[in-house]
Every structure is written in C-alpha cells, then in structure tokens.
Length: 197
Image 1: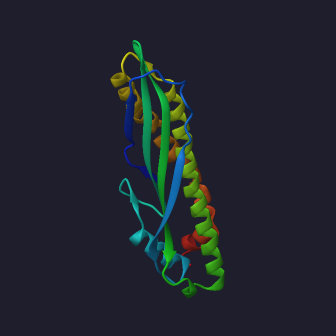
Image 2 (image 1 turned 90 degrees about the vertical axis):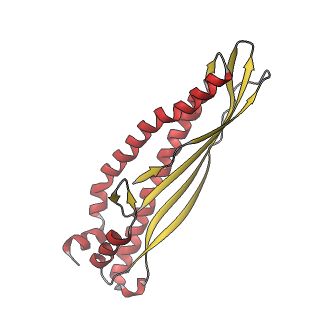
Image 3 (image 1 turned 45 degrees about the horizontal axis):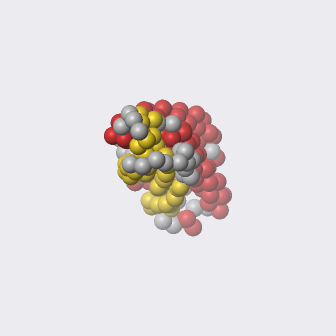
C-alpha cells in the first residue's frame, strides 16, 4: 500500500529568452524503516504485524511505501508567451517493513519462510516506487510542454498537472495492490499463517 504526500513545487521565474525545454532527471532516494514484531510462529508474528503494523487510509498494512515528490522548474517569458524551460523532479521514498525482535525464536524452517516473505514484501514495495517514477516521467513530459501567455499561468498549470496525474497514479497503486493479493496469500509464510501454524 502507498500513501503520497502533497507534491510541493517551487518555481524559479526567469524573465529572459531561454533555451528549449530541458529534459529532467528524476532523482530518487529510498529510506528503509522497520517496525518490530514478535512471535515464535508465523501466526504469532502475523498477529503482531496486525497489532503493530502501519495503517494506510485507516487500513492495516504489512508494509508501506510513502513518497514525497518535489518539483522545481524554470519559466522563461518570451514576448507574449511563457514556457517551462527546465523541470527537475525528485522523489524521497520511505519503505516500512516488519522486523522480528528475535528471529532465532523461529524454527529454521520458519526463518527461511520469513526471509522469503520479507523479500517478497520488499520487491512489492519497490514496485510501488517504480510506479511513482513512471508517473513522475509523465508529469515531466507534460510540464515541459507548457506554453501560456504569462508565467503566472504557466506556474499554475504546472502545479495543477500533478493533481490531475496523481489521481491516475493513485489508481495504478491501488490496482497493483489488488493484483498482488493472490501472490501475497500464496506466500508459504502466509500459508502457514492461514493454517494457524
């Protein structure tokens, strides 16, 4: 599951003739954070996940990715029109995953299942970051095509674009989570949980 903070945009307005729009490099950083869980069996650990795990939009989650996007762009006024000449987008992702306080309390077989399960969780959350980066690339293309009568209008259009794109991006994130439910349930660790082991 994912939650994204509001995109914050800062514009540097240049009132001179400028070069053609420059393609942006989307910068990103990923910070991993862990919340502790405990238990001696998969079922006990899962109960601990439900008790201590994160919430997204009021729902319990096993792992989460939050994204903070920051956009910086430059505008150039040329005669009666203004356009975006440069756009820099960066994402700061925070991935939150469960971590047992005492992994040695699990049997060797359950430790192996846990390692496999957390690898699945991490890969799932990293896919969320890729989806946001694709949305960022779409934003970049659209922002660089902005050309209006005034730089104030261009800045407003650049900032409104994210709101429009974010709706579609949120749907993609939700759809991805829905598609992954069966894969999550098929994980051997979760199979043990469902059996009450």
